[in-house]
Length: 202
Image (cartoon, rainbow, N blue to C red; front, side, top):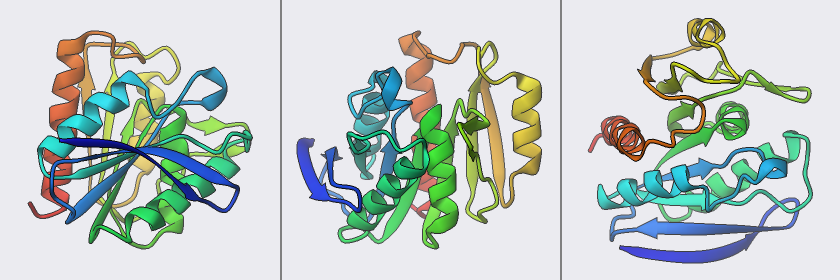
């Protein structure tokens, strides 16, 4: 597997990323980290596990850092769009994955992009500042959530799920918002890979 740090010019400035690739460029996923003001970055331990497993399954993974100036969620959506367009220079099929804050920005980006094959929302929150999660895109969606999540209750998750458009599924795990049990994290990662393999037609 090749793991390489890269940088490209986005609308707001330079976007720094890490790309995980195991030789296949047919499909790719942009992975969106948690809130940058609370330490969210492309090195998030959950995202790196997902990225490595995706690459091992022939799916290129791009873990991004949002631009250094916090954009209240709106700017970060643009960073994700720019990253998706960068990825589409190299892959035919594109997916988005967001964790926590990243799930909000990935959801909004998926609506603005017209070529997202699948969207995974890991422990989504409902809103960030004035930016609300947007589940109106028609692409297939997978919700992944901990039964003991400290930020989004199961009742709130059910509401988000019911409002989501298109084909959808939800998987609950015996964990909280942070997925600190490595065995559970690997099970989550396996479900993520299975979802993207299916939506990409692998």
